[in-house]
Image (cartoon, rainbow, N blue to C red):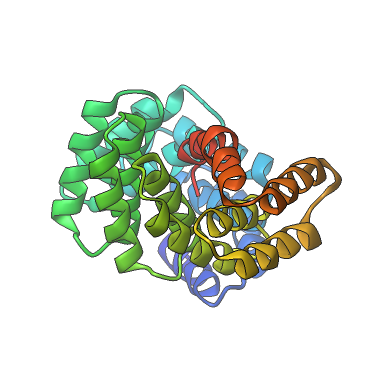
Length: 279
């Protein structure tokens, strides 16, 4: 089996959701194709999907050490090591964007990296170029919204995130972040709707349930607020219980208390953390 056939088989398995078989297939061929960056990169993606973060990082790092010139490999591996704050990410992502400036993926991943590293103007430039190349990609719109938010441009961030939601309305993570940005823009009623929908799409996200509960209470939706509190309590770990109890106390105290906790404590920290994360 040649390398192209191997990668196509692995891709087919991945498309079917069988990441276990895809990873096993790629691992079995390391002896024959151990000097191929594309194989290590593909295995890194598979390991990441399986939740093996450390193994994924090692695969992406190996791929970059083999000095690939394929922009897809550079972009994917560069993004993979960026999750671990590896300094090699910058050069890999920059090289990918320079080698293939007409590929939305390379521009998007480079821009997303620049945004989180504090190079806001360059980030927006790359992401706006990516959006022009593919205006239908919800992830590009999302990353542009993140870049604007990190640079303090709340209005443009809200518009970009609204576009991301329009393009992929089932993405609960984006809806929650959009709600947080709307709160930053003092648009509580709109924010409550997005936070509620995002929380329903992400039932395992305790923080999202609490944000939705406080926003619902602050806008007079008492019944919904208690529902979201119960959803949070059902999923909460021991470390979450203090925040759940605090949210419940503020909901009991009424809309003004809930709005105060939301705006002064919960929303700023949630926004800060979620902007830095790479979903």
